[in-house]
Length: 506
Image 1: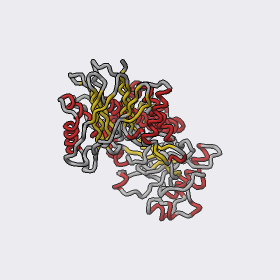
Image 2: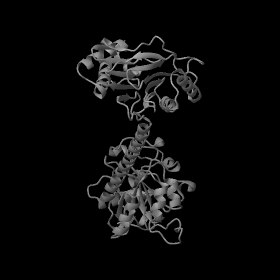
Image 3: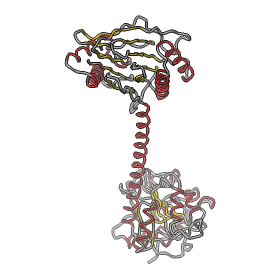
Image 4: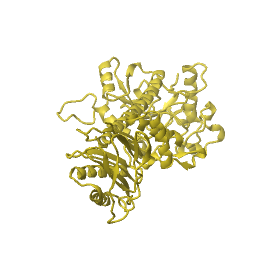
């Protein structure tokens, strides 16, 4: 019975790299130079009826360097003009669309429906391969096949629309190893470097399980035995390899994202302050919530240190803006404040030096920062207060309602007025007290019907008074305050929030 004879397409030599067409994949091998294109239709019909009883579609053939697998019947339907221009579907009669009759939808310029999987087969003897003619993707569409005899051809055919590579491990290696020894998987390693984002199936001799398993360890998605291959197995292996490669890439990206997030978290946690209060009877608590999504650090900053004379210094500040640049500037100001405080600076002298730091470090002349500093005397009964455009702290003492400290002498924010001054006010604290410092993120949340009103300082003071009456103190009080402000806002706050509290009990 005559074997199906493939038609040679008019592919330019510069494109194909081949001078002759290959025998049909999975069909009998033989000399493909005999017979004319016009004879292929009858031969294909005869072969189809004999090979697959009751089948309505002829076996598929394969061009050596063509982009698609096409049926012999499809080729017979090509008009002479089609053959001359590479078989473009644009000049084809409407009733001659090769895949429309099979329910595969509209065809590409090469007669291949959109959405097909594409296989690049790298084998020095594609005509002798046991690949069977019919390869189907999960939707039942034919899988497109390209073939290359060597790695040079493969590199040219390896375009973005290739989904999977079927590589014969018996191909000659591109080069010897550096020590002069032969590497059995050198050709695979070369392909993996050439196509790091493509799925790869390794084709090896029957029974060579060890080499196939080593190929998977090196980076292939799976391995197949050359002598046991059939269309069903190869179709399934291609789908598996493509999905496994997608899964591997997604998992790798997720792992990289988690590692970056962990690294950023460690970095940002390291930039948050560790209070230096050793030897002080005061209790410290703090809450911090950046406004940026998935960030641990915002433009708000705070710190607390105890100097050798027993004075406890506390600070809280806010750089205008919410991005990473503002967060970095806030860290610089906090570290500068700690260094200047430990060096003995206080009040107006300290704030003036911090303004110089801000002016040198900011990326824009319009960037400013608000600041509140408190220095508590060693006996804990009085404190000095400096405000640079910042909200005044809240003082709570037993037997009287919580209230804001005086803010009449509030100076300008840092970075607004060259040569500005910041008066230092003396305040009495008493024997037992709680002092809460906060940024404006705590008072700028929206409340009321339609969220049109700000909570404001008065609303915050009323909220804290109620929470104190409920017996909340320290960390528990700060957590409740931040959570309630968020709930009143109807969701996450858009601004950074920093709150710290110092408590003194007799």
